[in-house]
Amino acid sequence: MIENAIRALALGRKNHLFDGNDEAAENIAIFYSFFGTCKKNDIDPQKWLTYVINQFNETKASQLKGLLPQFIDKKLLG
Image 1: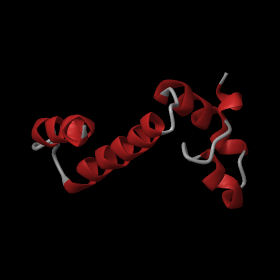
Image 2: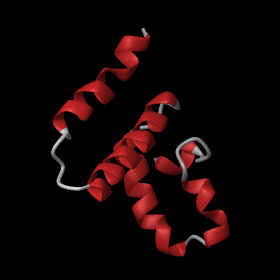
Image 3: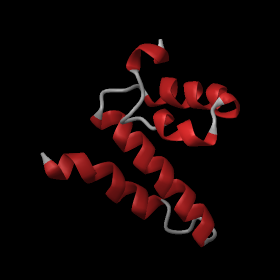
Image 4: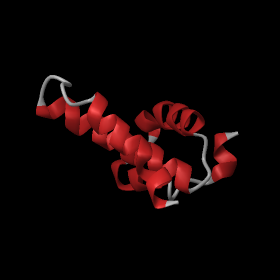
């Protein structure tokens, strides 16, 4: 069960070995974390990302934590 859960990470590590630079690799790691958290919380990553992109500019800095997948209200994602 654990091996299946991390399979995508292992494949991604191999596929992203030559991403170009450390910053690109860090960005990819951040998105893997977001999408993994979506999966863990039974959230459609595409719906979550669309919602976050649409809400980001209207959200106060002190409330950005509420946009993270583990804290988001699933009802807002449609």
